[in-house]
Amino acid sequence: MSKLADLVRNIPNWPKPGIQFKDITTLLRDPEGLRLAVEDLSRPFQGAGVDLVLGTEARGFLFAPAIALHLGAGCILARKPGKLPWRTVSQSYQLEYGTDCLELHEDAIQPGQRVLLVDDLLATGGTILAATALVHRLGGVVAGYAFLVELSFLPGREKLGSAPVHSLIQYATEE
Ligand code: AMP
Image (cartoon, rainbow, N blue to C red; front, side, top):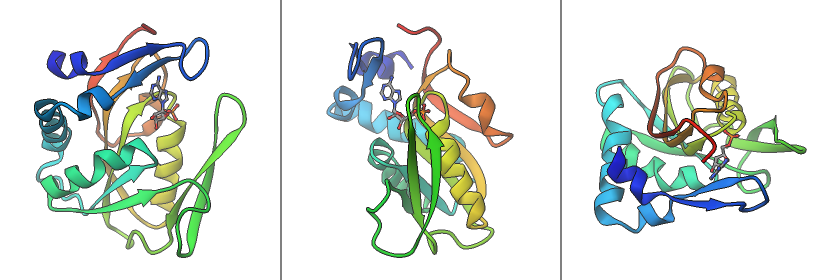
C-alpha cells in the first residue's frame, strides 16, 4: 500500500479551490507501480467468474483492459454522452453542481454476465452508481468493484450494496 500511495501525487486546490486532486499519472509512469497496481486490483477477483470488466470514462479506461487481461475477461466502456457509436442506454447522475451522464452500448452485456466495475478513484460514488445502474438495466450481475484510490471520508462505499468493494489506497481524511 505505501509504495503505491507514495506514487500518487496530491494537487491541492485543483481543478478548483478546496479539491485535493489525486494525480495518478505519477503512478502510471512508474513501471513497478503500474504492475503492482494492476496485479493488486485484479487479485481479489481471480476465480470470481468475472466475464467483463467495465471501465468508466476516462481514468477507469487506464486500468480496466489490463485487469481484464489478468482475469481472462472482456472489457467494456462506460462513456460520456455522444461518444459511443452504436445504440446506447444512458444513466444520469448528480454532481456537486449539476448532473452528468454515462452510457453503455445496449449489447455490451448479455443477461447474466458477471461484471467487475473499475475506476481510478471512489469519492461520493455517483459515477460508479450510475455505471452500476447501467449494468443492472442490461441484465448484468455486479461481481464487484475495484478502485486504485478510495476517499474513505466520503460515503461512497456504503452506497454500493453487497458486492465486494476493493481499493488499494485509502485516504481517511481530506488531506
Ligand atoms: P464520484 O462520482 O464522486 O465517486 O467521483 C469519482 C470520479 O471523479 C472518478 O472518476 C475520479 O476520477 C474523479 N474524482 C473525484 N474526486 C477526485 C479527486 N479528489 N482526485 C482525482 N479524481 C477525482
